[in-house]
Image (tube, rainbow, N blue to C red; front, side):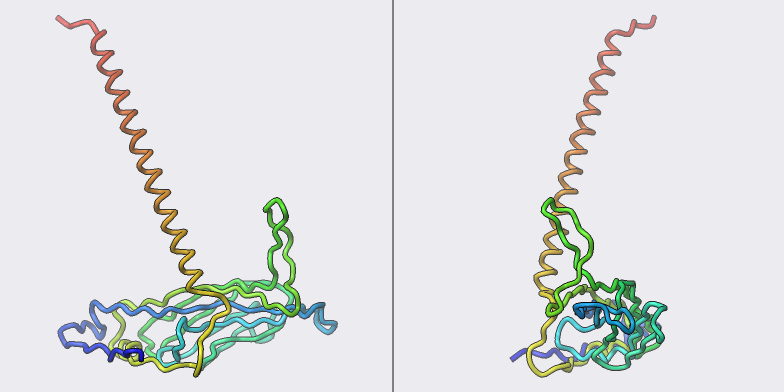
Length: 237
């Protein structure tokens, strides 16, 4: 059985201006969209896809204990551009034919905590790769297959308010009974991202080391030329 840690006990001495000094709480989230191709354009409006944009927790956790509402701002061509979702699941389903940026704004139960704004580019088409490795024109997925574009991120609360701290540290309640799944393997994606970051760091360290060696060699060459010039200069009486 999983061990559920009780909420952190907050001492009076650790409180400053209504905030929990030195406290940092991280809430992992996943946001993105899933889209399905109709197979052809709809005659009435020319739409080609049904899509759902969403915000959800990484783990099976009811985020409504600390999230008040989520505001999804769609493209201005939609009749109701601003969609407010007050309870899980935090998602909006629509139909359309084009890709555009969706603004996702997360509001918290404590108004003293600033809202968090996320940006997601709605993806409807997959990019085809040609035999030479270059990218071809976007292509719709087969109608029976869903196209998924989602991102792992973290909402970090640094020294949250006392009220927000209490909401964030209470034992989490599950959203669903049963297994909690994502459209993509988030853990594998995180692992690949971490490996890419570590590889990039190693590359930077190597380049810095090589640059230091070049600087050292250049300085030694300059010193050698200075000595040679000094040897050939006539002595002053």
